[in-house]
Length: 628
Ligand SMILES: C[S@@+](CC[C@H](N)C(=O)[O-])C[C@H]1O[C@@H](n2cnc3c(N)ncnc32)[C@H](O)[C@@H]1O
Image 1 (cartoon, helix red, strand yellow):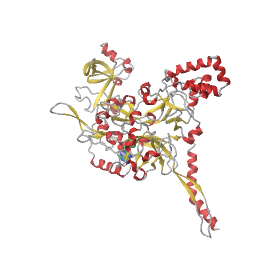
Image 2: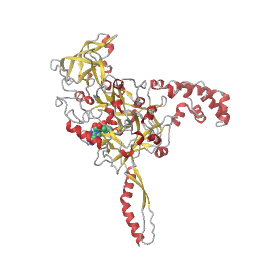
Image 3: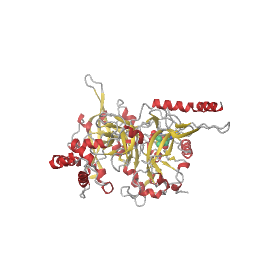
Image 4: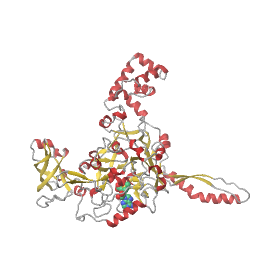
């Protein structure tokens, strides 16, 4: 009797757990479409795989942010590429121009940290099957009067599309461009470039057409002599990129000889869905949108139900005498919200920024290191700890969007248990050890603290230190002068119907923060052309010096529109710093865009909030505590 009552009680206690598992399963019918798993390229670490069939031009994932990093060499008085300071992000970052929306205008020298598709997929020149678009820019409705301005990146919505039909299970590859591999030959070896594949194909064709070899190949397929022969070819001491493009083993070589290198490589770059389910990590559980938290900008939201703590229950009921019965249950951590490989920055001082001053006595420019003038925006996207110089910057898909909530967070970070992107032994090494590591070696998992419904905002607790700093920032926030009248360039760009002000009407040409640009080709300038025509829409931008005139155009049966006479600033050949003024007539509004002047975008707003997210004390390694 007692036994039965206890079982009944235990079952009642379990009911909510079992129910939540059942509903989790129901919702999980909406299954993962994108995985992080071991790359099929030998020694390439992690790779990204599609969990569903994709058609040409399908969108993959939900769009990446881009975080500008400005004048890093200047602020560190050295060169990252010469390894004057340890900057692992160089291996993963993009030139600002690739981020789009004129990020290269942000500063003298800008690069872009693009977590997600900007950092996780590998490159395969032959099998490249995805490409990223460029970012758009806006501040999710946060204005210059808001304490949140400049504390998050405005660059977002960098979407990834399929370049061809892609089968479920295939690894996704982007094109880093040949320069990336050529400059890394010393440690990456001879990675094949696009032009090496036709050479390798030709070699295989000849191989196949040679009767003796053909019969050897097809009769002895896996036989020892053939294995040794292929080994000899692959390991031939005269190395070349074309040799590297050849199949690495005999099975693949036979397949390539029969079906072509492309098909054989495609086959080798595919993992089964069962394997991805078992050993991969789902990348598309979260997607970004405007945050529900005031001043926070954008946030990450659950794209599907994510279960909380998973409980594997073993009911062991036994009795000793009359009263002893026991329920044992094994609790597993919450469901995975997202994996996040980390980029280590052993010296956080690298993110400090210093003013560029001019010595009044000598007239020479110098870097004022008496005190930092600010910190890179990237700091807000990295994790740290008060007693360490180490920063860790995640590059998972959409994880950069996860905001802070200390009262009721639904997610937390843990050190990943997956050796694929987390080498736990490195938590015992001192910070200096990381100075010589040039790839991502540690990683977090973001895991659910409770069941998370589809559409719920994902939050973690950034720590009390962060929260105190944020509250203090909000209390002391003084909005920049003129913020109420300030119209940001993206709003000016969106409004194509209002007439633009001429120089006579507005001597500031909109504001001290904004520059105007006009599409007009350099060839037209060299030809001395002074009338704008539609072909110029495909041309490059030139800075507008002044808008001289505005005229309304009436064309029969068409809506009225304005055209403008402009002065453009064009570089003088062989005089890099100097510009000439060049006049162009009849420019339509669609050819004119507004962008922030250098060092005037939102992230440069004076006093913009900067603070890293904090790694909880209990998980921060003792060996990394190098600051008192
Ligand atoms: C890792 S980013 C999170 C994504 C960011 N919201 C965005 O739009 O890109 C961290 C920054 O988000 C903002 N943020 C996060 N949680 C916040 C909160 N609870 N209140 C205000 N701002 C928050 C702060 O600017 C913080 O430095």
